[in-house]
Length: 159
Image (tube, rainbow, N blue to C red; front, top):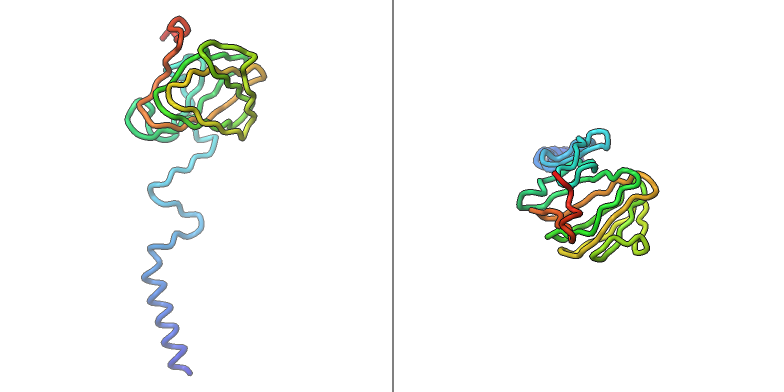
């Protein structure tokens, strides 16, 4: 009986020693993982659309490959009809964000998306957004390079 317990103990010790590098203990993130709390985001002025905040999370939307960033829209903001060359996924993080589709801004076509909402947007589909009720933050995910092409070039932000 002692020999059986000793053999089991030795087997357990060997197995745990071999498996230890494969097991991540609680609280340890893999070296290539990204974890960000909201207070760790670095907000900058959006270089493509002045007046909006931008916090890059993953990748660079100007380069080839996946990207994720957040955009802060101030209260009362309207972004006129525009398109993007890539498929995108939007998640509303806070506030209520309004989106509509078409070649011209039309408040009657806006759909309200409260915090927690998600929608997808196919490439090159004209759309417009607004934040009439207050500030909203959305997270955008796509594959770059990307840009905003305004349907009416006169609506493109002056940079």
